[in-house]
Length: 168
Image 1 (cartoon, rainbow, N blue to C red):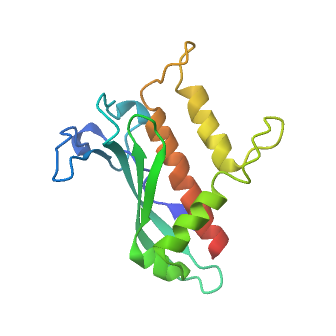
Image 2: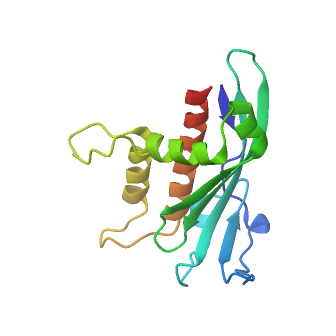
């Protein structure tokens, strides 16, 4: 059993709107525990900005009934909303018996499915989630609506949870 203790959002008091520049010139908007996608700030700067979603998940090994909690951090490009990376807490990786590099390969393979882009075929749960975000957070003129990046971030968290369930 895997549960998501907090889904990658927050209320306004927990949100960091500062977009502080750091030494690498990368800006982040960190979203924590509980805000709706509409509450996430929209960025207007270049591709060095990221939406970062930190979520605590609990993973249960069905064979031993042991439970491990840890943080999963999903980073999306704030402009394109494409996945940059997913960082999994070491304790979760150790619990599943995989490395971060192995997880990275598995999430890309597991998430989007087999790459078949035939719209008449069934979509993987991940692809269906992403398509749902596009449908819900795109206006009739094809423009992004605030919250689409957060929705996609939640899709990646969900896929991460499903991957851990498949591994264990």
